[in-house]
Length: 197
Image 1 (cartoon, rainbow, N blue to C red):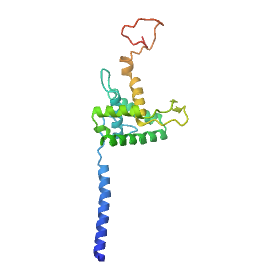
Image 2: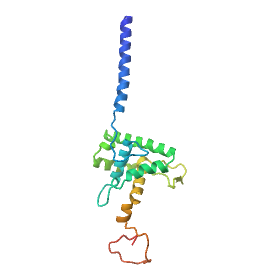
Image 3: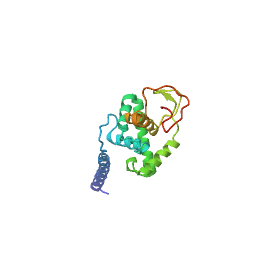
Image 4: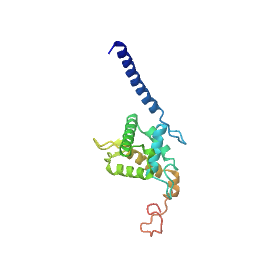
């Protein structure tokens, strides 16, 4: 091989390798952002859309409003930003990436692309198979060397917290009575909630 062919082949290989790198970056950067009706304060749009769909899968709309209808994803976004320290936020985002990887490994597509049945199946499996998280109160770990909670466990906890503390659920579903009446220890129940009537 003469020097001219060697230089031409080297330039061609260098060009092909550069095109491959730049094309992969172009394809990654062309990933479309999810469209949201609200502006997240902590998550990016794609992460917020994922959190919203996980929350809605946990608490879909039935006779009661669903998680999205009660703005639970916005609540989760604000809680993560305002109540978690930087290391917990970083751990949550890493765990979110692991969650997405597990979904992709099992179904070959993202959680947002799954059918409702696949989402329910996956989250049910995660709920059963993931290790429990350590016992804690108000952000203080009460167990030494407890397992870190997974993305799903954190989002599930925040979803339930946001749902049950929402005004709509408190007023119309839980039938909260802010001023309790007299104490009647043995009262016949006529269809009302036993714990607050």
